[in-house]
Each structure stands twice: as C-alpha cells, then as structure tokens.
Image (cartoon, rainbow, N blue to C red; front, side, top):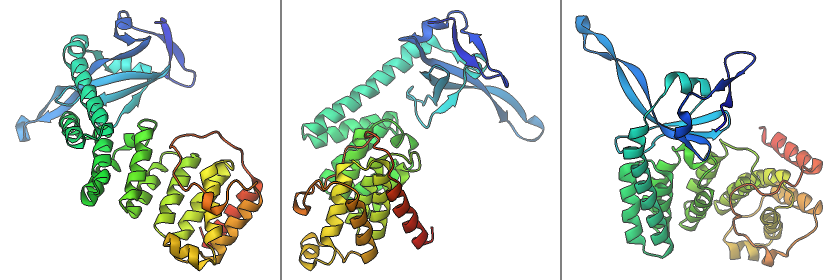
Amino acid sequence: MSDELHRLDLGDKPEKVSVPSGWDYLSDGGFIRCAFSTAKKVRMGMSANTGKRDVQVLWFVEQVAPEKFEARRLNPHNVPAGEPEFIPMHKLVNEFTPQIVYYEEDVLPAMLALEDKLDQGDDLRQEGKLYSAEMEYGDALKMDERNVRALFGLGLIFAGRKEVDRTRGLLGELINVKAAFVGKNQHLFNEFGIALRKVGLFDEAVAYYSRALEYTDDDENLYYNLARSHYENDSWEGCIESLLVSNKLNPDLAVSCALFELIVGLANDEKRLARYGKSPVPPEVADLARKVLSMQTPRTTLDEAPIVPSEIGRARYGGESPSVDDLFGDWKGEKGN
C-alpha cells in the first residue's frame, strides 16, 4: 500500500501522514482490516480506595474509504457487534494498537464461522427448509444478537408462516438497528417490507419504511414503498403525499405511475372500490393523481397496472418536474405542514 495514503485532519489545512512501518501487513486488498485495541480509564473501588485503571477495549477496524475507517466493538464471541464508529487516520494511528495475532487466531475464524451460519440459513430458507434455516439464524444470533442478516432471515420465515406476533416482535428488534437501513442488505430490506404487508401488518410496514427514510430522503423507491403501505392501510393522504415525493424524484418510476392510475380508477367507482376492498378516495387526492398523470404519457390501463413493489435501492434519477413540485407544495400547504 502507498506510504502516503491518507490526509490527517489536524487543523484547517489537513496534511498527509505516512502509514506506520509494518502496517501494510494489516491490509486486505490494499485497505486496512484488522483487530485493534484501545485503553479506557475505568474507576475502581469506592471512597478512599477509589482509583482508575486502564481497561483494554477490542475493536474490529475496516477501512471503508481512502480517509475513513469503520470501528466496531468486538463482543465476547470475537465478532464485530453494535453500531460502527467512524474515525480518521490520525485517531487510528495515535489511539489504536494493532492486535494481529488475536485477529488471525480468534477474530477471523469467528467471523468466518458467523458468515457460514448466515449463508447456510439463507440457502436453507430459499430451499424452503424453514425449520433448519431458523436454527442456523438462531445460532448466528448467539454470536451476534443484533445481526441484521439473521434478524431479516427470521423475519421472513415468521412472516412466511403468518406468525404475526413473532413477525411484529422481530420488527421491533430490527427497527432499532441503524445498520438495517443504511447501505447494506437492501434486497432483504425490501423482501421484509413486502412480507409485512402480506401478513397484514400495514402500520408496521409504514413505521418500517418511515424509519428507513430517516437515513435517506432521495430514494424514490422507498417513497413508493411507503405510499404502497399507506394505500394498503387505507391512508389516502399518506399515500398521495409519499407518491408525490416518489414522482418528484423520478417521474419515470413505472410502479408509482401505476399507483396514481389506480387511485384515479378507484375514485367515484363503487364497484372497483368494493373489488379492491378500499374506502372512498377523497376528491382532493384523486384530483392530485389526475394532475400528475396529465403531465405524463399513460403507461398502462388500470387493470393492467402492476401494483407490486419495486426493488429497493437507487433507481436512475429522472429529473425534477416543476409542475409536480408545485403540486407537492400546494398539498403540503393545504395540510398545514
């Protein structure tokens, strides 16, 4: 790896820092990836006997960008657990001590064993061997009690078996794990949102997607998924508001257009409302949907509209429409937001 790898953020004018001698041994494909330790002062004793001593804290540190490192605590099972902390190079050099032997003899084997459990769980779940998959995910959670892949896997199993209470409880675990919503496991994220709707947990699906939008506000697919959850929950205002944002971010997203078409088709049509089991569409919601569709080329008829969720993650950005911006602004103004 390069001797001058990163900037040091020491003041107004960051400088370059040389990687300490021998640290190239810690690299994986040119990026640092190893176990480290830090010393933490801990108060010991009481009253006159009170004192402080250094306690070793163990970390797994992985370089995620040229100037960025992700540090996660290592738990008693020698695997990274909990939310990551992001640290600059100068802090890593000055405060963290490499633990190479510990990494090679304990951490790496434990991480590989955990990954193997997760892979087996995923494979068994996809093969329909749900009991065996549940056992593998359970073993993984014994090593890392908030492991995102294991929690998602169990959630999909519980939802698939229509175990509503267990699915709801699992969601309570997931919704408190930041890592579930940022950057990774996106296909599982989307599958679980679909599963929540299929077992009728519409409030929970709304909470799930709303939680994800705390970490990103420019993903048209997330807003579509939230709109679809509001639609299933008979919340027309929430549905149209989320759809307007989705359309603003990407006017070409076909599933959002299809849901606008469905809203228009259901308005003032008692037979269709009965067929879909929906409450009447408020006139202002139907009017907004019509206005959006009038700006776009029709894609499908109502009965052909594929009301299915899109894959989670970034779709191609389609540009903003001033007219849709105006509609969204008017809607927010009317609602007093």
